[in-house]
Length: 241
Image (cartoon, rainbow, N blue to C red; front, side, top):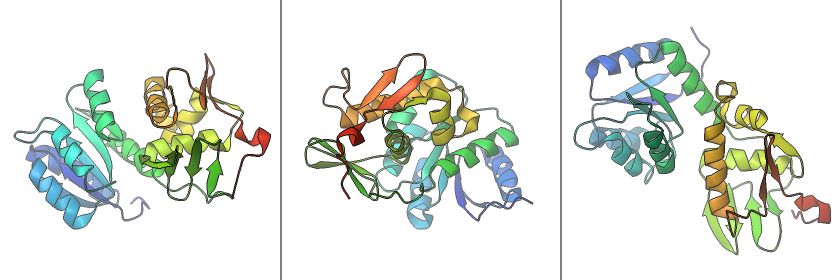
């Protein structure tokens, strides 16, 4: 049996056979599993049990997976993996925009699902405590590493867990080019090393939150064919404790 920690996973699907299949495999891996057959049940389970991760079917009758995800994000920061029969990029982007952490296309093998779950849970782990909790990039932008917020022109803007991990990696390597493969591995896990579209999407999310003009960034620079580079704010000793 796996030595996985006792993390709780909520399985949400209107197909009982799918729920049984997923539950059986996750139970064998040592997870605590909960079940819901529709969006309303899912919301009740999230409120009552605060699971670490939700496996959420997209195509459910009544409240579909997207609406359920939207309402989950109003009450919880639990990781969410969408389960779908379609590998449509538009659906994937929509789910990520609403706060999903990953997508798995049906049919999937137990090994693939397990790998994706481990990767998502791993990336939500808190990085080591930084030496400095509040970093002043310039007079416009500060980053609170302890609260996982960015402060733009005096206003706090919350980051989703994956956005925070991406920004953390960029800041920790400020002034250096971070290759696409390195960022994908460190933020999402080695299973995602070829998913350049996912990285571009989250760079776009970050730029919308921190850049004055996302089309002309002053903090996160694209190094074409190589990766991304965060402005070298330490060059002028602008870091504060």
